[in-house]
Length: 314
Image 1 (cartoon, rainbow, N blue to C red):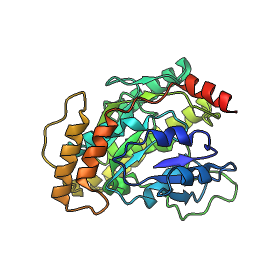
Image 2 (image 1 turned 180 degrees about the vertical axis):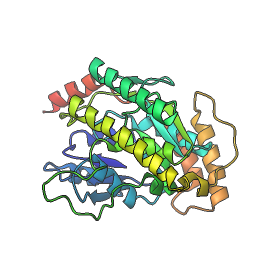
Image 3 (image 1 turned 90 degrees about the vertical axis):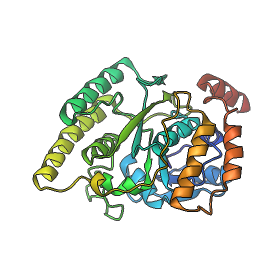
């Protein structure tokens, strides 16, 4: 699932790295004025195009989740900063028993080519606050590369996509950049089994980020304390955590080695399909063949090389 806003020049690089095992691509457009939607359709005719109902990344994600039909949802960015080739690592963790998997730039072999020292300092501070308040062991709070079973979406309790935008033009709580922190915390508060995998964050290929270090940092801090109050309120009201009634059939299998051999991932996916029943959209033989092809794919291309080639094309 990919939220977009004026990303026509980035989509070719992102789509080229999508693993062939993916059976559904959801593009959520936030009112792009360039050819984002047209390019998405040209590159992937089977992509589902969704127009978000309000503004903000949070609303875009909520609209995308509502449109997803596959068992597993993976959130990636359209600017090239998240590497789609890492998706099998997230899927592996889910198949092995996790309900929700976070990408981490600062542990498990992850790295960031984009974060500044100031943003890293802020992320570390916010991360520490969450770990203290919620007794978690997060290594990276403010990163939007996540994957989870579609059946846990109700636990995230995002704002209803049918609600109107406030008359003053502001965002509903949960419609902005605080969404990434919100869903990470709610996954923990609802007692979901949350895992992490290492991820490499790259520089945005084209365009400028809408992130504001101080404004969005304070918004994240406000989110943390708001979610802590929400969790305590639900506990006082004796509302059972979502995970207590959650049933996800996963094939019993040992955790894959750190190399995350993709053959093992596909083998385990085969077991899941046999456990949950046939999926007409997935041919397992073709899936295995495509997975072997994925082994030869290189990491996301170097940003500087992409930019230099683009300048020659212009």
